[in-house]
Image (cartoon, rainbow, N blue to C red; front, side):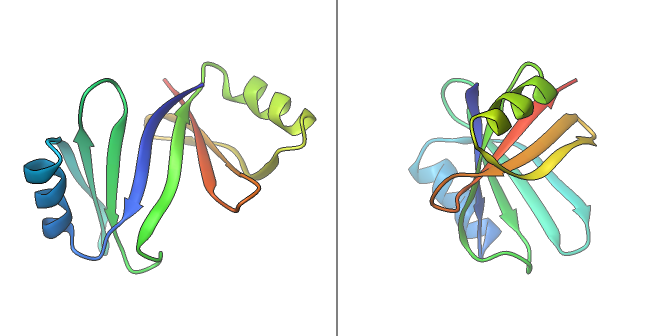
Length: 116
């Protein structure tokens, strides 16, 4: 597994994008508005990992999750379950592949993603 992205829920998208681009040196990769009330901006820095900024009214502001890319999500989930991992959402298809969610011992969300 490799870390693919960190998701941060933001209170002000413009202020957050400005910080990550002008102060931290990231570049805007893409912007998405999947439905009203949800705005997503993907930022790219060095290497493959990205930062995903999300503005919505459903989640608390702060670090939301860490996304990890896997080769075979079904095999990975099965292996993690056998080791006692708490899977909070079984693999499900999305537009770019398949995702599953698990929780670490501190309650942090880890998103597994297998791209098409």
